[in-house]
Amino acid sequence: MEGYKREFIEFLESAGVLKFGDFTAKSGRKIPYFINAGMIKTGDDIAKLGEFYAKAYFEKLGAKKAVLYGPAYKGISLAVSAAVALSKKDLNVPFFFNRKEVKDHGEGGVFVGYVPTAGEEVVIIEDVITAGTAIRESMEILSHLEDVKVAATFIMVDRKEKGQTEKGAMQEIEEQFGFPVYSIVDVYDIIEYLEEDEKNAENVERIKNYLKVNGAKA
Image (cartoon, rainbow, N blue to C red; front, side, top):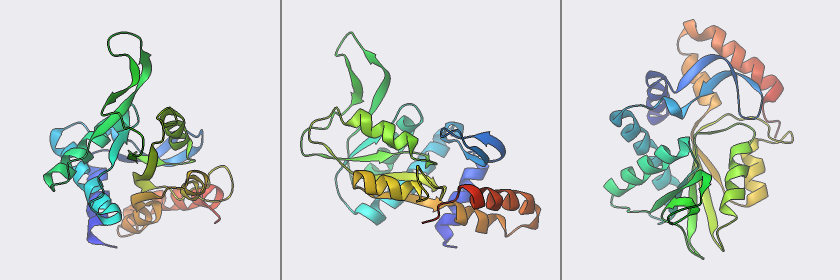
C-alpha cells in the first residue's frame, strides 16, 4: 500500500471519522463501517484533511482552476479546507456551497460564496459515495446554474458498492453525468490496512461479507 494511503486511513481512525459497527447509510443500506466527516472538529484535523484533498486534486487535475462546491452541510468545511490547502500550494480557487433552505431576504438565493458563471468548471468535494444518492442531489442543485460544467468529484473513500444497478456507484455517476469521481482511498485499501493487525479480523470479516452482497459486480 502506498504510504499516503496508510497515512490517510490512520488519520481517519485517529480523528474518529472511520468507525466500525452497525450503521445506516444515506442509501438506507445497513453498513459495517462508517465514514463521518462530521467528526472533524479541530483546526489541525480540518487542515490535514484539506491537504489530502489538495494532493488528490493536483494528482488528477494539475493546476486546473476550477470552482470548488461543498454540498451542505458536511461538504462545506471539506470544500473550504481543500481551497485553503490549494491556496498554500499557489493555486487560488474560489468555492461555494448551497443553503438547505432558500434565503428569502437580503441577497436571497440558494448559494453562498462564489457563484460560477457560464463556462466555468466546478469540482464537487464530498466525503463518501455509497449508492450515489448525494451526488445526484448535488447535480440537481447545480442544474440551476446556467452552462456550468462539473469537471470532477473528489471523495475520501470509494466504498466500491453497487449503485442503482450491479455496477459500481462511482461508475454509474461517471456514466450518467460524464465526469470522473476520484477517491483518496477505497474500501479495499481499508481492508488491507486492517489485515495488518489480527485484532481487526472481525471487522475485516464483516466488511468482506457485506461486499459479497453489496459490492459492485462490474
